[in-house]
Length: 507
Image: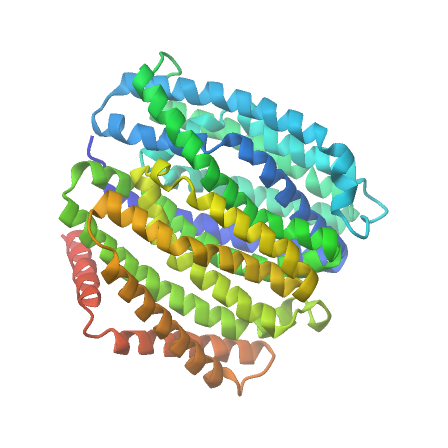
């Protein structure tokens, strides 16, 4: 089966974007109500528990990604029996994983108090809240989460997005109502497991209707089992690094600097992560299509697509980086007021964090689509060592700045390794030309950020100033990028690709 990659990708991006808007606006509204009704310590609790349970999700070992990747080929070949066997294996694995997470989670209970420097608010119990969060994490593994892999592998994540738009909106509305009406954190948090149960049931019904031919039955061949096991082992490092990069920061901040700082930093991180989430929707939507193209297209066509996607990623990343640098502080002043703001040095570091994180996304997407995790298996562990070591040292020297810088440093260490792996095992050519493009993109980013920052300086604070700054950022960054790249072959290829897609839509 050759998937309708462009059609599916566009559909996934549209509905994924709509869901991402809900996933930004909803938590933003919830977070705002929590800040003003309950206080920053409760916001910090949210961030802390999410980070702790992210560590427990390491038990998943990357099994989901490995099994979704293993479905690409049988889907392309219409091999239903193999897909059924993979689904059966996935269900069995998830039940074991759920049991492991539950067991480890309970064992960690006595150690929770050491992760909160100044304690928790008087009206809540650290242990009761933790058990609610733990239950929410475990539920999916014992229900029907494994069925979602079929939608992902068939490049139909738009179905997941449609369902999530409705259910998530309902949950956010209920959370806001209970906070305003009762000011009770327990009533707020109980909606998480309720929403998870409803979501899993809805997923199961949708998948059963769309793919009635796929049932949990049969066993995969020994060779395929060994290949999947190898990928899971390799993916553990990637999974561990992803969790540590995002979760360790909050745990270190809570243990050393306190819940209040976790809450303030969480507000800043939330804004950056919302933008990352929107871009993640795009990459999640095209990963299965790229995986399918690697099975069905020539190396030349795959590399041409890679160059176009990389160019577009660079363009969007630079514009977003400029906006973060110039709009962060005036927006935070309106949203959380001056008393809850952090220094501009944090803004600068988060802008660098965002750029480095996003400029790597195309490479990581192709690596995941190709399933070359084993070849890349040592890289994540180096990132973990650099990140954790620098985190524990620098947080005591330069505080919050050190925590963010540690993550940036670990990502920079990873860049050459990622590039080498993708170019060697997918494109089978030298990566030298790509490094020149990467350096050029970074220099452009610095130039455009500098020009936009000084162009925005006259507009200090207030809603009007924020709007003017947004217009200036968007105009300056896009105009300069286009002017600088006007003769870039990738610009021409991108314009040609867009024109061709529009013509097909009009025909």
